[in-house]
Image (tube, rainbow, N blue to C red):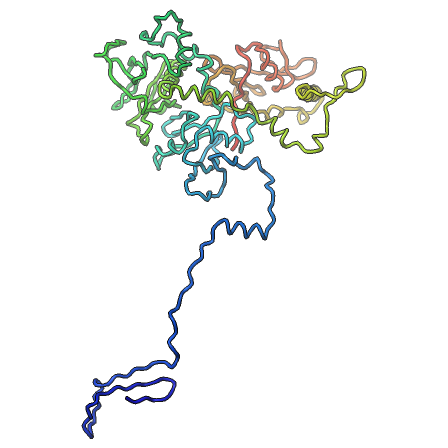
Length: 526
């Protein structure tokens, strides 16, 4: 073995057998050459591993370097215990899902909701974020625009479960709007369930009248059996056939022989537990229906298919409302009664609470005064009296301003022609058909109204009012009296300085109307 000094150590290992002298060729196969560095052998290298930084650690380090900044808009944030999150960014938890909710002007808002969020909870959040003046009678609608189908979700329904039944490529959407008729059959059952449609098999042997029977059934969370003729669209043809139907707790049946109730003549149509009922919009154009009072039943678990739809057409709006209300009561029963009680216990308004919560120190130091007496001013201690005095003062100021601007010598630019445009019940130049559609969508209850510009008479307006499930239209015309301009609906017998005074008067007095104005048809902007 021979070593060569230098930066590398060369070790030659040869066999002990001597080589022949004078050999020209060295047998390299019998020797090996190994090059090894002079550096000592280093230990095994341990590579660095990534360190997991938890969100709490980031939050703590960030909070130490940056002072906390209070939220200037706390009312825009969702409640701390609400299952719904309102944010443009996805939440940290992975179980949140994004839904999109539309309003009636086709604007939308995206919401992060938990799997268990109900329609009532989503509506509650939308009321807060949209700064609505009240929390009553809001609803979430399920719409199929291409099919003309729409229905109001029940308050207890889970929103994501409903969305899970939609087709991925469909145009189905949620809509947020008012619905005054959701529980109206609890308040006026005889209007929704006429005697002619109650089945003869109903229990009337106890000497109860029809109205008492309906009241008892509704209180127990059920509904009387309904019967009557309906037009049904045949699936294979475009023709409509008139068939006698029976709606019972066990399901929907049709008679194969006139109005016979014999079991051999009854044909089973649908199970109430596995279907939803929808109202059909524009049914004459889409389906060739014999009337506009059309509704549809479809399976609730599967994505919608046209061949699965059972489209039915009634003779009147009262008949359609009766059938649709009976479907809901038979399917949900006692749950609807619980939803109705919860809706009555909900807070009635946010306006007063907003004013009290957002009141500044300077406003809190102000007091209401009454200067009507001869002894000088007095401080109004009663809050209700103070609020009433403020309202009367505002109305008196508006009345003086309107009378001043109604003088004929003023220019048209100085007239208060736009005072009504700021009101929620004014809908501009919508058509008669569109006004009826808005009222139907928000519930056909007595006293629902809106005011719109007349499309046939210049400078005139139309009051559209719902009464007994029908929409009536009253013309509001301008007139002059004593050189001043007014509005009237009864040929000048009753004069109003503007449309706002007209509405305020008819909210207390019927006048020529069949019912007082109660519920304004409003459109909220999300």
